[in-house]
Amino acid sequence: MGIIKDKFKIKADTVTAEIKELLKEHGNKVIGQVQLTQVYQGMRGMTGLVTETSLLDAQEGIRFRGFSIPELQVKLPKAPKGDEPLPEGLFYLMLTGDLPTEEDVAHVTDILQRRSHVPNHVFATIDALPLNTHPMTMFVVGVMALQTESYFAKAYAEGINKKDYWEPVFDDAILLIARLPRIAAYIYRRKYKNNEHINPNGLLDWAGNFAHMLGYDNHSFRELMRLYMTIHADHEGGNVSAHTTHLVGSALSDPYLSYAAGMNGLAGPLHGLANQEVIKWIFEMQEKLGTDSPTKEQIEQYVKDTLAAGKVVPGYGHAVLRKTDPRFTAQMEFGKKHLPDDKLVNTVWRVYETVPPILQSMGKIKNPWPNVDAHSGALLVHYGLVEYEFYTVLFAVSRSLGVMASLIWDRALGLPIERPKSITTELVKKWLKGEDEIWGE
Ligand code: CMX
Image 1 (cartoon, rainbow, N blue to C red):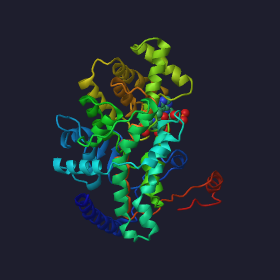
Image 2: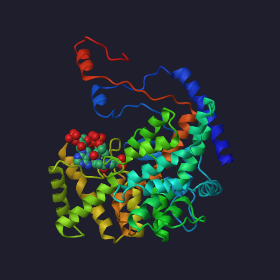
Image 3: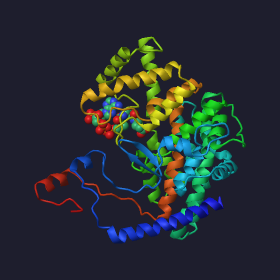
Image 4: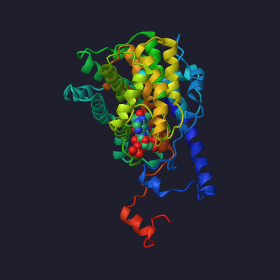
């Protein structure tokens, strides 16, 4: 771990010095105006935090340290005979800002393999939950049980100097990422596969070993996991899971507490849980229509019924994106290459042809295009991973790469506790009458 840590420290010191200079010279520059609507409506479009690992463009989609998903598919190292990027390479990129060599990625894989041991009390804690507990609840409870291992919490209790916070956070982050596939696979096998567990394969990469422990050992599923773990890893800093992890971390809650908090946000149906909702919605449509290959006309009617019932069409829309999510497109390309004739995948593609014009015609939706969650479930079902309540756990394992890389940066940059100002409607009314001022004026 020393080499990456040393490399990170040099980068972090440089960036810290740059930010200091930048703020000294330009700290009072105005970068935006806030409208009252934004205060009431989810702070949409307000710039309020720094996240170094990735940047989202409304038209183009996500770039990780400047690289788009198709670029990463070319530039990041692959597994032997593989075409998809190794997600540990993306972690290296997000952490250090540099594209990794094959050797760098092999080093990260090795570190993660050697640190993947999960203490027994974590499994015992998960076992204490009834089997009908949602997998995301089991997952977050497992992560909380693992918090006993936090280096940062111990170091803080022993009085660590604030300049050194980043170091035990770095160690916690690596250990957490290393252990999550084991915890997630344990939950899957416990809940759905008769509690029959599969030992890790120390020769495989992080995502390949995860696929193996889940019980899906063919080459093409491993490739899917590598792609899946890469594209779900990060989506800049304002989304609920990333922002929550960052916010909770800003109170110096350790990486386990911060990540668990973020994943509770991921478990919401408007965020990560949408991936289970999409497939549930399609299964329900198939059942209602009595066919596994609904026509465009049938889908159209089903979408209209969904909207008339006051529900959202899961997998469509986005708070920032205004075009088809490149994470959707990457999965569509995977589908075309590996399973072009799959009926469910073809249904997802027909839904893609049908939904956007209907949503657009409603007039109020800012983005009628599919997001990452519109596609992922259908690929998993193809390989037999049909238990859709588990899908958000896969998202969560991947998301650890982005939010942990960011949390390390947060502490290295010495970012303070986050504390935006809130107001009351009473104050707004007084302010509009000129009787009071909104704080900050
Ligand atoms: N189906 C039906 N209505 C939708 C919709 C959809 N897919 N997407 C947005 N709308 C509605 C909103 O509910 C809102 O309605 P009201 O004014 O009646 O409240 C209106 O259109 C305007 O919303 P918006 O500004 O376009 O979207 P937001 O930024 O408020 O919300 C999102 C973004 C993702 C929560 C929303 O598009 C949605 O609920 N999508 C479906 C759930 C989903 O797929 N979530 C996953 C997102 C990706 C992820 O985080 O994993």
